[in-house]
Every structure is written in structure tokens, then in C-alpha cells.
Image (cartoon, rainbow, N blue to C red; front, side, top):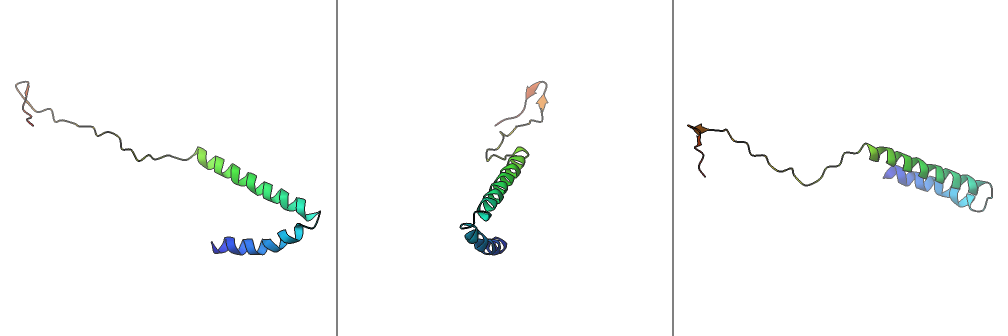
Amino acid sequence: MLVSSIFALSTAGFELRSLNDPVRYPLVVVILVGLAFGLWHFNRHRARSAILYFEELPPEVITTLGLTRDGVSIARF
């Protein structure tokens, strides 16, 4: 947070001077478009390798021990 604030304050003067300068203004536009494209590409690459986790839990699987007495199940509920 502090680094981004320092960066914003340090570049604000350059941006203000470039608004009236016909050479600097396209340079600022090219830099900002390049940064936007770079962030877009970075996010697109990270989104492909993302693993989604859902809040839904898989259904529980009930396993039985298979206890029987002479072929008849002895489990009572």
C-alpha cells in the first residue's frame, strides 16, 4: 500500500506535465496501454492454471463392514 502511494505521488508530476506536452502525452498513453496489456496477459495466464474450490461438499460414501451371520445381515438400526 505504501509503495503504491509513493509510486502514484512520484508519477503524478510527470503525468501533469505530459498533459500539455505533445511529445510526452503519447508516451504516457503508450506506457499505460502497455501496462494494461501486461496485466491482462498476466491475469489470463494465471486464470488458466487456477484451481476452483466450491463450497459444496461431495456426498459422503457409507461403507459397511459386511457382517453377516449365515448370509443374513445382522445390522439393526
